[in-house]
Image (tube, rainbow, N blue to C red; front, side):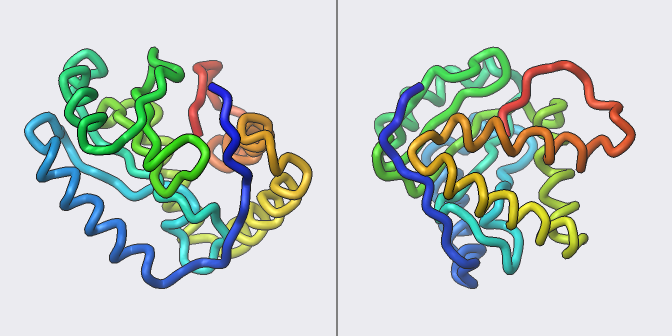
Length: 178
């Protein structure tokens, strides 16, 4: 996937949790019939005090990727842009456009490895201020270096995320989509 959206980090905004709740309620209204498990706010906008791209990462649980396929059309009709990106582990959307994003929506099988890792990383950052500061500094450095290359920015954060999740190197070789 190519995109023109720049990487711009902002200071944490206390309104983000309330805005996520509004988005969650909207998603339940338009696609709740397909939801299985929960709808989670993940990513840096969930961590109080963390710098973040002002983009909400929302993880929407499904029984399986196959069972989530009917929701794609409904979400597209509701303003989400679907990108067939890493479809072996996720169905990924952004909103309102690839060039200007306020939301990333991830359709993920509930309790899959990816689901569990994202929740665990969120919880680690919320609990460990030292880890959160280290991650924020990495993000600032990478955003300055890769401002126009979102994929490189994401890939370069990967080793930090995996070493945080698996401090003794127990990470599997499965593809990640953080």
